[in-house]
Image (cartoon, rainbow, N blue to C red):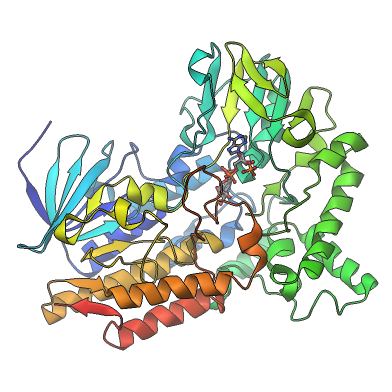
Length: 538
Ligand code: N01
């Protein structure tokens, strides 16, 4: 029901990890009047929508938490190394209740537009429920992977069975019992879902366009003594992750893979493989992301593991990534992924050897000239990452300029937090910030705290607007590109490179700071210390 325009100090869009903390700091630290709009019907963001079977966090649970509530850090107990989606949602509900966040969140409401009014220096935000609100500050907490990518498959409208996208999974779940199921995609999501679906379905067919390098998660219970030690050490853990490269307790081997002897290298690889998780990716030889030769040594190790695990060598061959470098697409963590292809009820249809998907038919999927019939199709085809959710807000800045048009050739931001021409707009974990290259809570907390300090500064000094200067912004964009161009990451057809969606302008979406998220934190702090260098305050 449409209501009269209400005014707030700040409007926050999204009530996931970012929006919840943003609300907490603006309301309880700065005493501002804050309104949060959230499309879901409770808190959680990513963890509200992504309920597909096997969905769990790929970061270790002890660091996948808010660090600002010391008591909660002691009280909350994760049940496993990598918590499952329902448990993470329970955690976020617990934090929302502890801090009475829900009273300022309007659920089931999507922001559909926002305009900055130069005469009043206010943002007006509109929602799909007919709300119109004004605020001095508009803060996007929409997440990086929240706009679904459903490729435009020919014939989908003809399909008579049921289909689902992993990113908008039905709350009541999907029963695969006695069903013929297809999973399209083999990214991090599919790698989690496929082994679980295979256990339930009568038959599962996996449509693979590009084979991925998967590494075992090695999920399980964590020794209570380890938990005790971690809880006692949280202050240091927080300091270490904040100063780290990836927001994780992973550190590169300070040596070239090419300098190590084959025996030494194999032992180091084994250690990381056995440890599970991101260690093989983020704590490997430091030249892995720069040298094709060093990278190939890691890639070869994983291919050998696939060959060993998958019994049918023809299938193993198809599952072995070729033609792209290891670690330059997001590392999927697996639990029995390769083993799943040893099951009698699982078939792999590989685009390169069996033929690509041509169309969806009434009964299923046609690929390589052959029709496969299904009761259920699961699209695990990912997201319009990072820029997608922000463009969907239909934001208009100074002079009516639209964010969509300003970003026609890819994102342009300053520090990934601000956009020239869009005063008082802040983007938590926005494009061109470390965000998805880190353990997300670490990046989120850094942005939320920086934005809070910035707004506090504005309030104290009586400034009405802050915005990135075009010069600072273009220097930042050049910096983002210059750094990543030194790595192999630019060669991958990844969503990091905007390559997953036809027609999306090619641009590296996050920011790879040469000193990691710790270095980026210092950069942002320096900017603030120098009176918000690169910003215009009025
Ligand atoms: O999406 P993806 P995702 N025809 O884009 C294929 C995060 N995450 O949902 O590789 C056929 O990675 C596509 O093929 P290709 C994590 O950051 C976090 O799996 O482009 N296939 C690929 O195989 C992750 O990176 C957790 O050739 C098509 C797949 O679909 C991000 O979410 C857990 C196609 C898409 O893979 C996205 O992962 C899971 C087409 N037209 C995910 N279009 C956590 O731990 C696409 N594909 C929290």
